[in-house]
Length: 145
Image (cartoon, rainbow, N blue to C red; front, side, top):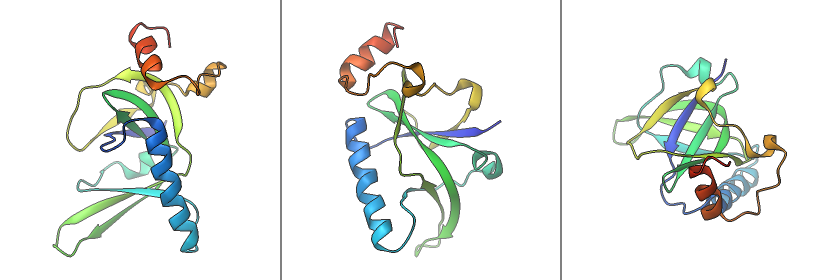
């Protein structure tokens, strides 16, 4: 069973903001002759890399709501110029909306078991991608999404 990561998405006010940033990073990767992807650098290196790379995703929390995910393609460790070891999470190009769920802020990242991961909104059969984020958030709080 896949293991996932949970992370705050700092700087994005909506899923569309995240999608725009990911699209820009994918264009940069393609221009460099690489497969389209985005990446996120974090200081802590996950110890359970094998489980994460077995179908895991990075779930993003945007404005206090677990909102979207990106597939984890690879995890690379490196040492920066300051001598500190860091971790680069290589993420797939698609930002997938998930059923919104409220989450409190935290530092770093957390593991998320597959059975606790929210379902993809596209799996519900309803076409709610065009619905405003505030409305989705409110419907999720009411237990209707």
